[in-house]
Amino acid sequence: MRNRSLWIGFLLALGLGLSIALTQQQEVDPYKEAERQRELFRQTAGILPGELYAAQGEELFAQKRGPKNVSLEACDFGLGPGKLEGALTQLPRYFADTRRVEDLETRIVSCMVRLQGFKPEEVKREDVKALTAYVASKSSEMPINVVPKTSQEIAMYNLGRELWYHRAGDRDMNCAICHDAYAGGKVRLSPVRSPRQGLSNEWPAYRFEADKLYTLQDRIAFCYESVGIAAPEFYSEPYIALSIYMLAEATKGKNKFTEIPGFTR
Image 1 (cartoon, rainbow, N blue to C red):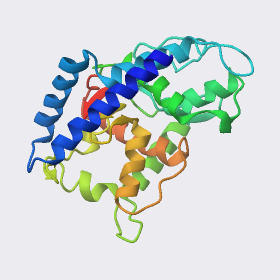
Image 2 (cartoon, rainbow, N blue to C red):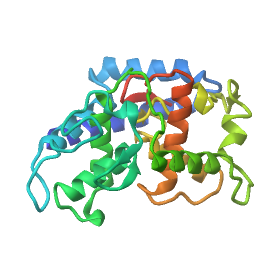
Image 3 (tube, helix red, strand yellow):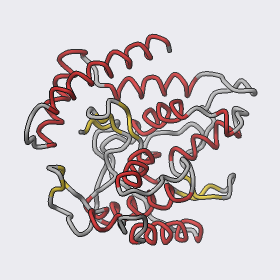
Image 4 (cartoon, rainbow, N blue to C red):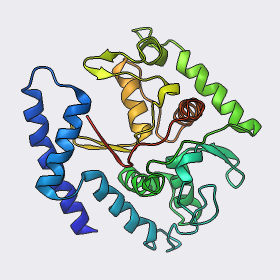
């Protein structure tokens, strides 16, 4: 585990240098620049940062931890205990054991609490991110298949749609102002996509400008902060609701996940 952490630290330092070089350029196509940076990482370190996060998550997943000294191998992500292949493709979804709709990150926390005996306040955010990268990697490039069916899932989808269009904050902004109105265009050189066009299909991903791994919840929090609205607490309903709305719409658009963990600007 220590070696994994050292490698991640090295790659983040490398990423910082690459990002500084990027900021010295004037106008850069985000997709082309992301691919260039990705290849630089491959050539320099032989591995991508997201892959190291996933490897760290794999170790955490199998490690016996917490007051109960057990692993997460009995965690059920919707396909049965320990079954990870394709699990992300149908999340968020309703889980009877917790009686709530959960996305991948929330489900990981639930399993850490219920199976391993951690108290919610003892769960480390960085552990959740690494575990998210690992579990998500088992759905890399698979079709998204989020279809709200239960009453709880439909209610959460409707809440997500409401939050998507709800204008708030001093700037009177909502998600749709950018992602619907400018879908297919660019904002600050970055391509803009709507949920139906596959928005949310690249997370978790390593953002080389930020030099860290972002999960979908991190990306949603970033959007909140970008428009001047305080982000909700991680693992709370707004994240789950917005996630199920975006991914259900991505399903309607017949989208699939990119290579996971992703690599993006």
